[in-house]
Amino acid sequence: MVIHHKAIERVLHVRSIWNGAISFGLVSIPIKLVNATESHSISFRQIHTEDGGRIRYRKVCELDDQEVSQAEIGKGYEDADGTIIPITDEDLAHLPLPTAKTIEIVAFVPADRIDPLQMDAAYYLEAGGAAAAKPYTLLREALKRSQKVAIAKFALRGKERLGMLRVVGDAIALHGLLWPDEVRDPSGVAPDTDVTVNDKELDLADTLMETLGEIDLDELHDEYREAVEEVVAAKAAGEALPETPEPARAGKVLDLMAALEKSVREAKESRGEEPAEEPAEVRRLPAGKPSRATPKQAGGKKSTAKKTAAKKTTASAKKSTAKSAQGEKKTASSKTAESKTAASKTTAKKSTAKSTAAKKSTAKQSAAKQSTAKQSTARKSTAKKTAAGNRTA
Image (cartoon, rainbow, N blue to C red; front, side, top):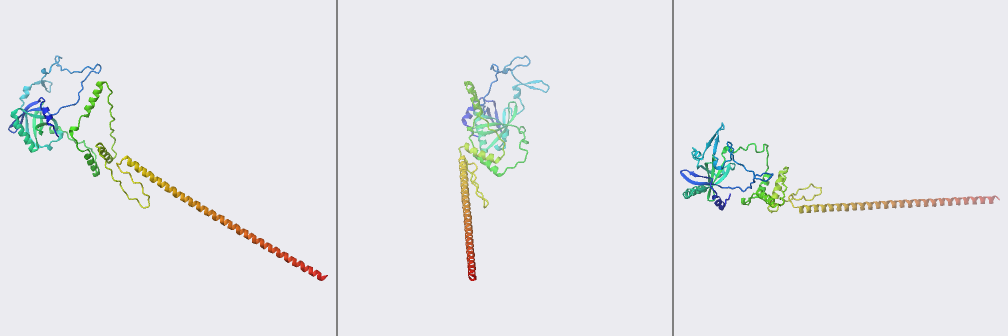
């Protein structure tokens, strides 16, 4: 994490919230404790909705029902029976505790030994005067060279705390740490079902992480605060409030692989990168079956899909044309065959008719010959009778 030196200088001019010393063995380093962070969140005042008047809280003594000022307010400990025991700052100064006004270093450990769950508020330690410059610098350089952090105990705001000292730029920072027993056990939070993740899913997750890449934390900002400021400005100017964008609906993940692939594509598109096109999968088709159109590539552009569809349409049209041509050829062949069959039938009929006519002609000629023969026979018989009559006479 990078901390700008100008930011540190600006923070160091903030009023200190605690004065004490760092106990580093026999070395004592006077320091002042200042806040290392500040809140930029927008705060609202409570108002009366009917007339817009401010709602204020007044501190009132329950015995005399009189409002009291801050200077008149002290501390008190309520006992088990309800009795209040007054406690003054002087009483707290006599605490039998070495960390009451001292940040006591108890150990030095590698930074990765600290669980981030324990991290609490952060402070800067400012050297308390010229005499503290030398031991302050010594501790800072020792921490740098050892590449370790210091674990310390200190008392602040009525309780003893655990802390971690580390180097930030040229300053020493103190991070408040929760006590180990203040961090809850995460058991029962993880899924209670056995889930297996395959290597391909892990590879896609790695690709998504690499695509999202790193980011400069200084580029991140509070968009919620900016949105609230925009609404307040519009309200103050009497303008229409900005429209709220539709939130993205979190659908049920049915296919983890598809969701990961889509996430990778969207991450690349958001960064202005062209999504890598996957090569089309080529498969062998069984022999004797017509080949199909090449499947469109996963993750391709719409234009590619349109071209593929156009090719499919052209292929279908060609197939239809081929089928039509084949159908026409079959029809023509059928017609030719029918014509030939009709011609054959006509020829056969003509041939049969000619044969029948020839037979009839032969029969007529035979009948004529028979008639002529009969006539000749009759003539010969008549002639014989005539000759015999002549002889008798």
